[in-house]
Image (cartoon, rainbow, N blue to C red; front, top):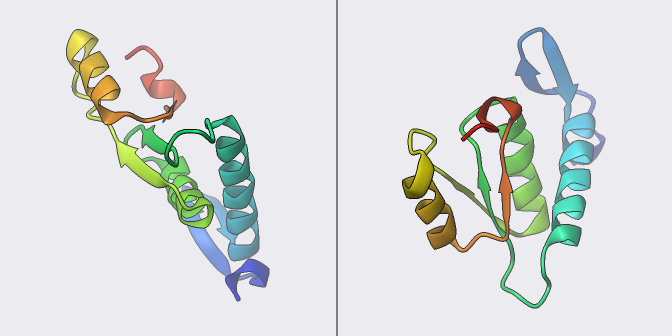
Length: 102
């Protein structure tokens, strides 16, 4: 029922997205990420960067795509962060531009 709703679903700063827009973007993201994942492995665990606007879309995409959205500790750096990522056994790592240097 929310797929066709034009009421506001997400507000971020002075921007808003309707349920229709939010879920359309989440569906597109889920499809793109599933296409990148190796189908021979278990469903992709996606490690995402910390809470930010895209996190709402990423959570919706995970729910729609049937995969798990995990998190990484962005206070870690270097070998410790790399070890955390490897231990997570995720197929994909999503980050926002602010954390690219990690």
